[in-house]
Length: 227
Image 1 (cartoon, one colour):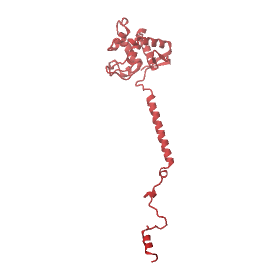
Image 2 (cartoon, helix red, strand yellow; image 1 turned 90 degrees about the vertical axis):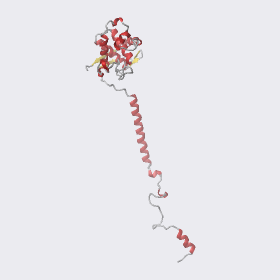
Image 3 (cartoon, helix red, strand yellow; image 1 turned 45 degrees about the vertical axis):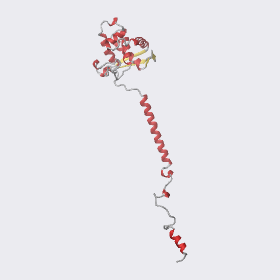
Image 4 (cartoon, one colour; image 1 turned 135 degrees about the vertical axis):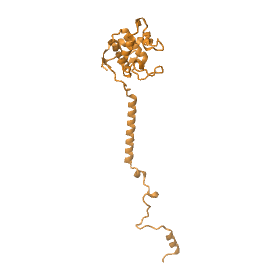
């Protein structure tokens, strides 16, 4: 055999080279087999993911804004609506509050009650619900509902939650109070509502007068549909 013993020992320590020349590791193993990140996750795929995530985030923001700003659903279809243009604001009352006041006024007049009685109806709704058709009660009357916070004994839920229907219930009870013309307006309301404080409604008497006068001056009509 040719070559010195030293050269043969050096050759024996060198790893064998596979056929074909260059030595390489198996695919997927060893440090040399790792591909750069840009090759394992293409930039185009990263851009696509960013677009999708951005679109989802924007959609969530839009849905959240809609949920916050959308009007509360009306739990009961109303039998009366106001057509025409109401004042923007009267004594701090506006929008749907004035529309409900107009419906209360119309209900009283439809029943042939006096203008004083009509104004008492508006005052009472101000003191009970701030002229809003509310679908909840309070600690004293958890089953109270509507403009006049009428309890279950007053009638069906659908009527108590209807602005016109609840006003009719109130005025019919008011009409049974004998001698109410000699009573202070707040005491008349108390005689119907049986509030803990008989003078509770007095603070809204002036507001009720201003609101009724403004409604009469406005070019509006209350249309009442049969239930």
